[in-house]
Image 1 (cartoon, rainbow, N blue to C red):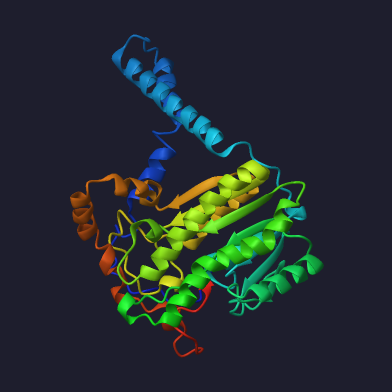
Image 2 (cartoon, rainbow, N blue to C red):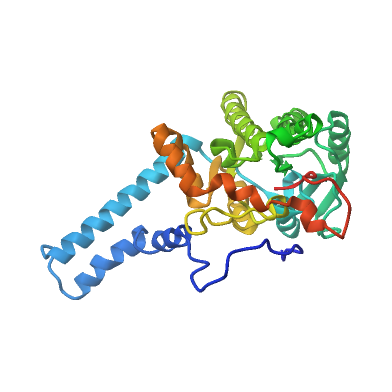
Length: 366
């Protein structure tokens, strides 16, 4: 899906601009760190009649065995953590996406709509592309319990009982706490956190009654772990969202083990929600394209997996930050520039300037 939004201001482009640690790791994972490729090397040595006792052969076989062991342990780790997948038949699934009128939510909705799934999008904004094949739009404020209950009944009537819920709606006021008004704080927490409780309470009865199981996807953020200047409300709500997801996963594992839980913890996404935000380090913390996140989310849903998705690379290891000595944390934080990233923030209002009125930080797709 081509974006209709202008790109945010960036530093001067150069030939190495696309280069990031994520790209390097991806290349290595499909080459030297892949078991199949690792075993090709000793096979090539054998094709040259090299003896098993020769040093190059011993080193290559040792490396291949090590990579195979790591890969096997990874498979076992995922199986122990997430269990067996459920069977997913897209022709039988009814997917509900909050904040699906634009950005990541709309991208996922359009992909599933084109693949023949039944998709319901909930948003207070009109759909960015007007309409999408296989996607039904419902104007709904997810912070309004009565609206949610009414829309849920309408979805069941129009499309069938929901089997997949993707909690994706979010807003970013992007102001210092002293500049936030109490209504702005209420609206931010309601949209980013309380709405998750409301949608879960509304749709869980449908999800738990599905004989083939169900899937719940929660879109959180690394900011919920790190925090950042001018994001007090957003960081607090995202921390709550992650805690809610993990606690609910523990509950449902006991009462409804056929429900799959997917927690998505991305860094900065290239969506209107964060328009104007500058990534502190394009190499270590590259801006994530929505299509890349969508691929991982769709893969987890399609395969019926429980999953924890972190993008870019540092997002998968960010929990270790809190293990560091507090002084070292302060140094890393200052060097990263995370607390200066919101300096150029204009949000969705800046993108829509001159097109359409609206309050800065309106409910949008993450």
